[in-house]
Image 1: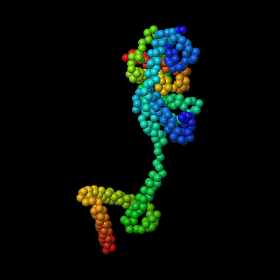
Image 2: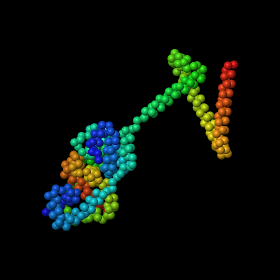
Image 3: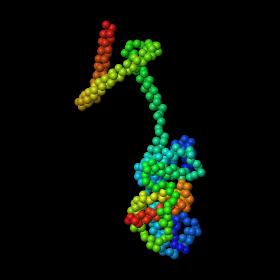
Image 4: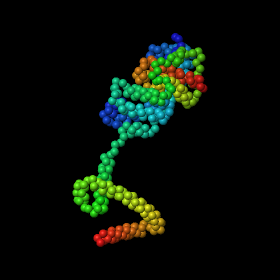
Length: 187
Length: 192
């Protein structure tokens, strides 16, 4: 397996195949992230291509002290924000610093904690989670996708978003409970 | 110990707690049915989100991006072909000019260098006439070929290839003699 930094160096030295290897390594992780953020497959494919163009054109500005995948997802995140701004879509910013309205989720186990998810079959539960994911605020959804779809570490997500690790953990937890409660509300 | 927070439960499931905190959570879970139930509920939820289906790019996606980033350059032989085509056109034009005016090539070149503008004008007129002529000729040839082909198709249903080949040769030879005869007649007319 080739190291990302080595592939970047080889691409900058003019080796096209090295950049193709970067594309092949990250095409699906990026599509999963972009797809979950915008919700449409065709649009997600188009934006994923745009991410790779952006990456290629700014490859010389990549600093090796950062993890390449973090830099890549940061570019993707900025591109999605730009897309939403251009389209003037009514969505919450991905850079939202406070999540006060979800603070009440940080609670102890209640006396009555109804089982929500166990009511469904696995395939049905997956489908309902995907639906619920579309309804959670973008700044929470993004962190949830990175953590549970792209399987990034909390530290890596913190690096991408320039947030404390504790804040990232708390927001991912909020996202999960938000989704779980959506299942409770919409059986 | 107080009951666990939901966040603690998630971090416990993800093995993200420090070892000391992990130990105290396990101790609490051993004695608290309520927290144990909450843990089991989140465990199933957690397993489900960990197994969400992955989106896959269509085949050839990477190649599509590569083609847009690195568009293919025209190969060298493509340029050479264009150059050869241009040169050939030039030679054919000179040939037509030679046939049309009766001048030899050296005088064409001398005249060409002596009076470039006049030659350019002549050449452009020749070009226009030439293209008009080519258009008419191609039209006639196309119709002729269509008729010949349909004729051949009809003949081929009647006779085999062993007869078709001699007939074709005879036809080509006859056509050549006719063209030669017409040319000869025209030349005699010119001399007179």
